[in-house]
Image (cartoon, rainbow, N blue to C red):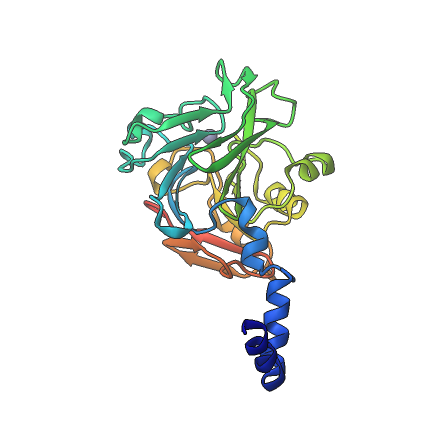
Length: 272
Ligand SMILES: [Zn+2]
């Protein structure tokens, strides 16, 4: 009875029949299905809190509770004032004072710091935390293999389908091997102010090596830290006139929301 009904339907509506058969055969998974193994999809809101500190708020698909990650938190007395943010997870590139003030973040976050002994040793990390993948890539704080300022960890945070890379206080350009090891990057947080880190022109070399979809500058001079020997962000923003620069207070990274070709997103934080 049922076969007859189906047979008749296929005769009358051949296209529907073809779709039905393809559906039964499993056919080709949709893009959403094929990517679902990477995590719980969703979207990520990104806010700049100053210096090298960002808040990533991941909202997984399906109504699960959001997960809040704060990168490289700074202490209240540094110039930007107290951080008024809480998080589930803090990820800090190295244990220098302006990057690892996890006590300044509310919510009793779990904390991952990429170095110990004030940059003396790396602390390896490749794990899953609260549904996020967090992986550290050992780098140095200076061009002389850490001889001057110690070690630094670049952290990849994968939230759903999106891969964020925070370079911390990277002090050198990346080798092709390092870039290949890191793999694809959707959003890159890159220091541009020089002196303690790579400068604007080296930052562009690193962007060229990693080929992210979005580059977000950080660790530059602002009125909040006016005495620091850093360059302002303009030097980085103006260096590649062919790359679009978008200024925004908050970014959202969502399916279909990333540019096809590289863009710079200048996230305007406290005091610029
Ligand atoms: Zn720093």
